Image (cartoon, rainbow, N blue to C red; front, top):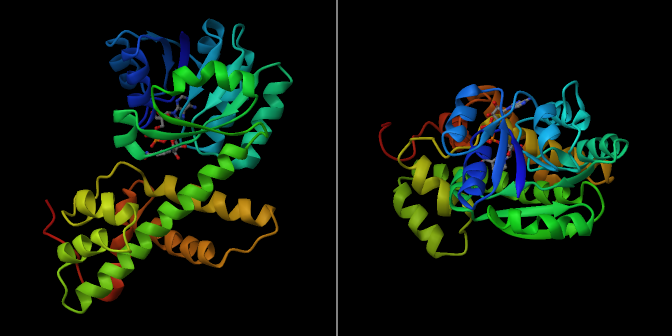
Length: 297
Ligand code: NAD
């Protein structure tokens, strides 16, 4: 199938690479020319703008880092909505349901179908094609697209209501964000009391405290102090803020989410938006006066 792909970053690049390897013809665009060049070397065609992509294919996928980037790419000057061939826009980014509905409504005016398709599972999941792919939008377009999305992960149809896959994704990422800061607090407490953090993680992973941070993030990026899991703090904070907005728009006040949100605001203030999200443990360590894990490498 001919597919457009816009946004070739940590997630977009490996997803696009897998689609090429599965035999799809890709037309790609990113603001970073080096990312485009690397995919052209693997058989993709380069485009000059989102509109150029949308002039050449019916189905355009995007994996972008902010709400504004999704809005601009979909509906801005030279955006997908001005393309001649495009019939559907599939947003793999996490943008929250309100922005998804806004983009849906703008694209509908041009008879372009929008499918929300946020993903979970990190860079490793994107490399291996094992992401959780959550889709909302018209069922017929979903069925048509499913063989394409099967290449990047396990696909779930959430519903036809625009934005509902975004709500699903925010619920998931709230839990992921909670796991990191909660596991950090648990391990910092143990280290302060003299426990070995590597033993703590082994015990937690054999016990009832196991979670995605203790299972994946601590062994790979926190205990070795490489802080290189592949998801920026700025993106995690974007998702936590979106989750809190989502709850507010539903008239809910979620106590745990609010506490988690406050902790992540400290992380972004002290570690910066570009830091890896596994660095969330460092402000907690500093306040406790301990360091968890090995020496920096
Ligand atoms: P990233 O910053 O690594 O990649 C974004 C890419 O988009 C970059 O290559 C950038 O040059 C490009 N870009 C930005 N604005 C653009 C524009 N206007 N036109 C064309 N290209 C543009 O981000 P990422 O980590 O790949 O995340 C992308 C999305 O996936 C985000 O919504 C994020 O929340 C979500 N996500 C990320 C992960 C992860 O582990 N990194 C996991 C699940 C979901």
